[in-house]
Amino acid sequence: AQTVTQSQPEMSVQEAETVTLSCTYDTSESDYYLFWYKQPPSRQMILVIRQEAYKQQNATENRFSVNFQKAAKSFSLKISDSQLGDAAMYFCAYRSAMASYDKVIFGPGTSLSVIP
Amino acid sequence: DSGVTQTPKHLITATGQRVTLRCSPRSGDLSVYWYQQSLDQGLQFLIQYYNGEERAKGNILERFSAQQFPDLHSELNLSSLELGDSALYFCASSVGQGEYEQYFGPGTRLTVT
Image (cartoon, rainbow over all chains, first blue to last red; front, side, top):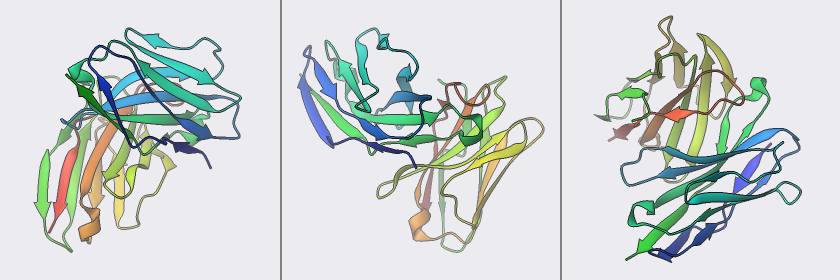
């Protein structure tokens, strides 16, 4: 069974600085998708960024980028120029590419605080 | 706004009762997923439907059931409620299966007293 681990329960960053959130996963599959979701105090789950395992290029969405290391099964999220609105719970998630096993497995989350 | 709607937003009920949570997917989305988020269990996948058929099952209790109707909305039924069922229940939808992104609704906060 696939598992997702986030070893940092809490992190903080100064406004305008850069922070990296860690995520590792375990799978025997070769084709899958990885996601970072943001959950602000409103509790809404917001997709931040996604990465296809077959792509070597790291995904980027504005200030958010990932470092995907497939062999190491590592998928970290870098937030540049941190803003107060980035304060939230961040979940790393795994999804199999097999349509017959279509569920998302979430990590335990990292609570990010942004210090003004 | 993801386009996924969930009702009600909040629900308070007593142990032993039965409740129904409703989800309307984004227009055009055929897949609906249900997740439970609790403090001790984190975010857990419960069940998935695709175009009216059950396609994947996760850690869903036997006291829980779900269905997807012809108009593609879905309902999650929780019965014989226990205190431990108190949680935030999310519905998500996607166009299809596999690679398609899931869009989450705002959730239903269930409190069992």
